[in-house]
Image (cartoon, rainbow, N blue to C red):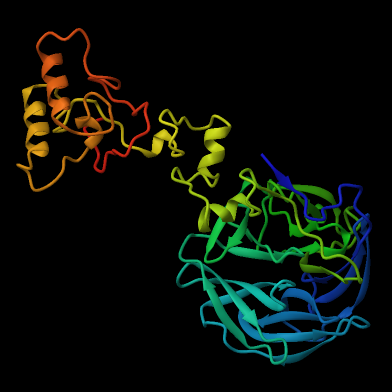
Length: 411
């Protein structure tokens, strides 16, 4: 297994300063805190609009932008004044009537601002591109009715995108029009008010602000967490706010890091076949993954997860098992199989048998008259049945051009 670091800094994470909107206030308040002391929160000021909920926050071209809604209806894109927390509307439109924008994230590789959304009528996760000049939203991906409710969106410095699904509490990597789950869940129970961001300048550290929906006291629920870029699991950094009864707590609808001039760091990723792509996405676009476990087949075979007895590069579980000699695939070894071989060899049938491997009784890679002789001999006194797998289901131990195009009676 190869883990590509792509500029990943393995030393201790540097302190970063966050901006976030505190939604448990009306109007919403812009606050700031640091990664090494999220309990010390400074309130900058309110957005100035009663009932305005800001569901995304991002930095584009040095400006802080937010997406807002009133009574669950999208309003549009706002410019944020980082001195007093007030906002001014840039514009909106383009979001489907049943869709809600849940987070904003800038993709540095594409140079575009994107938004995650959930379409409640279709039950599907969506991705919009937002025009930063007028706030208009263009639907670029509908990931389908997969039951995924995205509440967080983030891109690393290389343009790899990630969504947080609130239903499964799992991070998903965006692979074109597909979403691939990361190996582990986040380990938390969250509600619809949170967001995440990746620190491009700080080695690609991945942060998430959540409101824990478990049985914790309310003053312990607003949390800052770090996300493991290889598994998607999160670790508590600290409570956002004092974390004691009677003192303010600050559940955040999103958070953002004001960038500095530096490297755009990429998150590390698992690349077991060394093709330069993260395995999660490579199995969508290029790397064969016949058993659909989101690991390239070549890696499954190399690490012993899958067997490959005929060394053809395809895991054995992806091929239908067969019984050698059972040419007519009726689960019996009898004279009818000899007839089936002869019929095929002499052209007496308009179609080939469903499993040519089963007809290759002598396992020489060719179905011919010799196979009928081998089967006939085994039926009438030959010391052994044709070569493995004989009379019971199994895989071909040798590599050849024959295959089982249809399922045999094997379980």
